[in-house]
Amino acid sequence: MKLSISGLLMLCFFLMTLACKQDDNLMKNQTLTGDTWGEKLGFPKDKVVLIMHADDIGMCDEANQAGMVQLAGDHIQSAAVMVPCEYFDKFAAWYRENPAKDVGLHLTLTSEWKTWRWGPVAGAENVPGLVDAEGKMWHDVMSVVQNASAAEVETEIRAQVEKALEAGIKPGHLDTHMGTLFASYDFTAAYLKVAEEYGIPAMAINMQDEVAEKFRAQGYPITDGLIALISEYKLPKLDDFHSVSGAPTYEEKRQQFFDQVKEMKPGINEIIFHPSVGSDNLKTITNSWQQRIWEYEMFADPVVKDFLTNEGIIFTNWKDIMNRYNERTQG
Image (cartoon, rainbow, N blue to C red):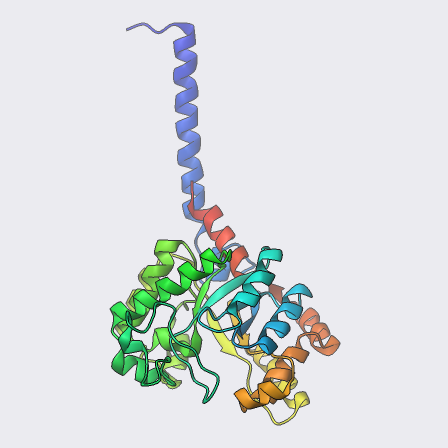
């Protein structure tokens, strides 16, 4: 069969386009390589990449005020809001005016305080294993593990995601209040399943040997099965995860933070804290009120800013992580 000149040109164009697509896909597959997720996503191999992340936003107005100031001032890179809590709506309204900020969902299955409490978004009648005799979520993680099914957990976290979406929040990520979603293999499976279905990265950690041992020592059931489950999870992960330690004075707390950062290894690290502005009301909610106030003050502290600059820390957030991942994996 003979082709016309125009036909030959069209065939050449098709073959060139096909070759370019193959080369592009090969390039994308090749770029998602490295020893750490930092390296896989294009960060320098030898650099600590850090997300400073505020938990418990929405828990009370004091937490909202702190989170708004820290995010607006770029003192931190990320925060997560508790959807079941009374002050969620107020923070959601702020987010709608600041949609570029990395705000995730602090998926909540416990209600730990004595008097300041909340119930499930899905309704107690739909997730009876998630509520205590008062109709509120359980005070502690083990009570959730002992009473709730994985199906109820999945129902509730889906309800929280849907409520946030309806409120105009486009979550940058998902994470877990009090670590509850890592307290059971089945809970973790539900958590990662929901993350993949919605295309919202879950706070999951690349469980290399040393990291896995660290979390085992903290009491988490890091079994071989859980490590395999996290390994099969398709979206990007952290290389390590940390929390700001408590201390008797502000200066000691700040120094402990410096020591933690200096000990971080290259790759994507997240360090969480629980900032709040001070008030009499905060003192009635939690006996950790002083630590929370210091964690609000610390990241605007010029001494802290100078330290982080001198350490050569690279900062990122979950939106940036997901953008980098998509650039390297999608045709």
